[in-house]
Amino acid sequence: MGKILKLIGQRLAIGLLVLWIVSLIIFAGLEFLPGDLAQEILGQSATPESLAAFRKELGLDQPMHTISAKLFNLTDSPYYHMLSSNIMVGVAFIKYYGGGKK
Image (cartoon, rainbow, N blue to C red):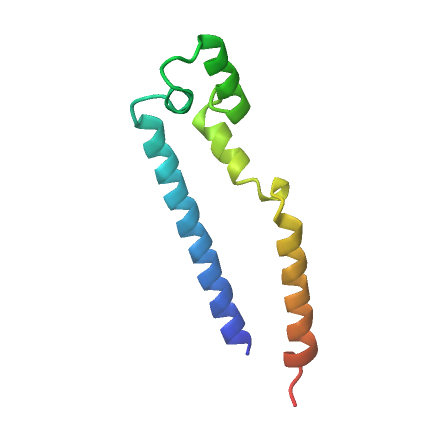
């Protein structure tokens, strides 16, 4: 049973690492694309003030590393507590029903 849990843990860690690397590649690629997201959403008739306010609201006025750090900060995520509590329930279930040898 211990080998299977170790394998599952390794696979999950590798999957999260791959997801993180792919996300960084996507963010880097988006940084080099021409155009402005705020201009595209608000249209050609948007004023410079409305563009600046929209960029600030979405955080587009910050550097890429700041935006990606906020996205990867899981403790601020609304799903963090739900996910962590579900993991703890799963661990308790495995310990109670599957942890002992019969």
